[in-house]
Image (cartoon, rainbow, N blue to C red):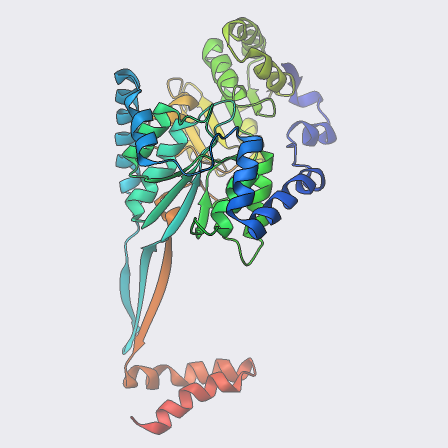
Length: 430
């Protein structure tokens, strides 16, 4: 992992270092679009074809039976069940507070306006299942959906060896998911978005995925026949801000934990201590030796960097501009700096708040904005599974009081029919 000094780095080099690797939309799109279009046109037949080709599916059904889910869940050991239960309880506690309140207000006499939040009726959850089965993502998406009150929640996740992972089956059970499809990749996104003869389409798809899944999500969200999505998902990111009091072993472990997600993961350390920078590099070299996924981790580490900055305030400024998915403040007086954080998906405060705790069990959601989208959107929440609807009711007196305002504005915009819809009611008298 290379170390740079902020004082000697040019503006051009700085932009390059903090730049993100974008999806080659032309290349990836050329592979994904035909699959999406095939599923849209040929439905079940196309889904089954791609599930066998890409997911290694056996048999002729992509939907998991209740028996399959129950059989898989029963294979799970008690220690893992206990861990999932604890994580689920914390996630539920945190997300229960997010349920939005409806309200009603009389903006002027006789003019009543209301706002209600209603659950999205049909949602699709995509759970990655490639090099790692993300059981935690099932909880992070399934629990908010349950709290929101979505009528139908379906899950699509590629299986390994045609068998559902026991932990994933158990997590799905906790989330009350009964409709589970053994499908991954772009064809899974198309299947949920457009529906097939045997599978009803969803209204929104949530969940992370690789560049093929992300591209497919973008395609279906731009198609009137498709559905909406939570957010575009890019490679995982962590940015750590640390001072001279930070333990280099802790810092290195956090960098490696995020690098473990994939070769394209971006991990960055900004520190005011040159000594910590050098010690962290040494720690990375030692800790990486025992990691099972060390070859993949090395690729991420080799394309990431450490930067020595003049002050912690400069580090925060750089971080706010970068808007990381995960931000760790490994500082002696970390709370002192929290109010200055304006752009980040999720923030971890202090030496004993590793990002991995948020990934699994603290209670906050780990489905977060990447690509710098944290400047404008937040992570998945209960509200992500709901939609607000406004209502208004006017009495005749209320319409009379507001009529001159509406007529004047309508005429200003030269929309006479708008103005007339008010005038005709006032003239009618009934």
